[in-house]
Length: 254
Image 1: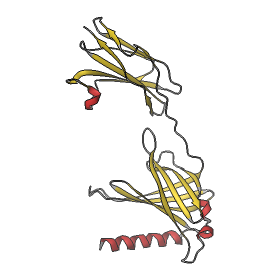
Image 2: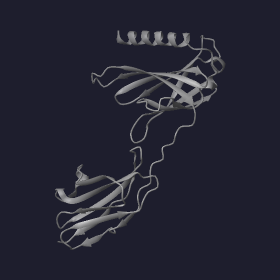
Image 3: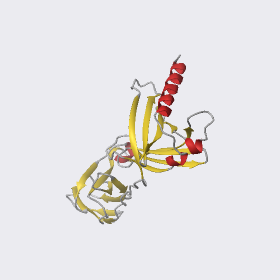
Image 4: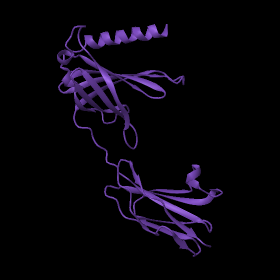
């Protein structure tokens, strides 16, 4: 019964889709497309490739700090009737994206003036009780915006392996600036502070983190005569975290 209802709904959707779409060459779907809404919470970018009657769709969805790659899937083109030449009269393209908990059907049709109209129909397959939902999008032709991740900062001091004997254990960390950085975040790890013979980060805990730093140095008081380590990463003006530096270790002997 459920399969029959799904089949019926799909037929109704395709009937509406072909009834409201003007004839279009399949090649009109080809290219890279950006969502016209920069604040969308759904699909941000599409890359569509057409070879003869074969179509692939690569999609990206809104995520932070970078868009999520939905992957590339084979798609299907639809003409006005069973004997249509799809290359010359395709009216719509559909693609299905699967995750471990959901299935999204994407329906695309030419919108005129260099645009695509897209709709998604998402249903959950994990018995979570969440409701299925529908979204509508408009896409314009253009190159996909490449989000370049900020480089990892180059650490300066203290050099990895440094041993300290002073008390109080005031420690100053320094690194080189990163082009494009609006701020920096430092993470300091402690050996045996969270679990015997383990780093805190190795057991899923953070001993100390200092976000929002606008200088390239950071001072703090360490605890105990034991090893520590530190790393830092840059954050851009949109709040996107860059690559993290390597860990540099130090230790206190008293």
